[in-house]
Length: 192
Image 1 (tube, one colour):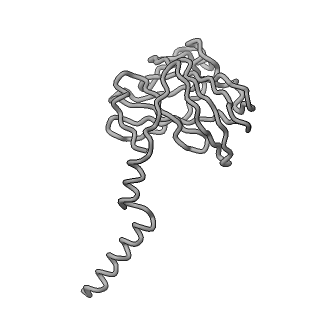
Image 2 (cartoon, rainbow, N blue to C red):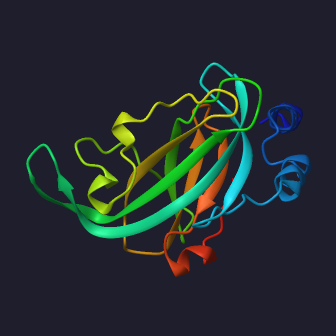
Image 3 (tube, rainbow, N blue to C red):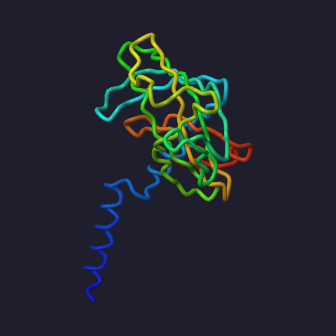
């Protein structure tokens, strides 16, 4: 085997890694210098910049007005209790547009487990947090104008095998904050 060809291939791979930013000291340093993802607790507010799928940016204040967990919720379609696969987490938000452009209250959730694994929580259709006395997420307008707000609730079905925390992202998939839905959730490390 040609030692020069092997060395050139290794050098090219190193150059490619540096160009992509994979595994470099700069990448590790960038991640280490990122501020920790803020935690939004019940009764607390947090002002963040949100983006939608088009890249439009608005400034919104999220208040977690209520946080409840339950093993089942009432299914209005089938008129019966629907058990959770793990545990239902209902988060009720007041989302106020504190900027000057139209906002977007679309959010997505992911669960990060104690083992670091990330799970997309998706959308749950047919049931809502309304049976717990929370705002109905199905009928709330989603784009508050400057100075206005919306009340909405988001329903997550989270696994119960190990501790976890919910990471809430905006419509543009940028992480906004975390929700600790159980006492052990605070111990879960979120790296990205």
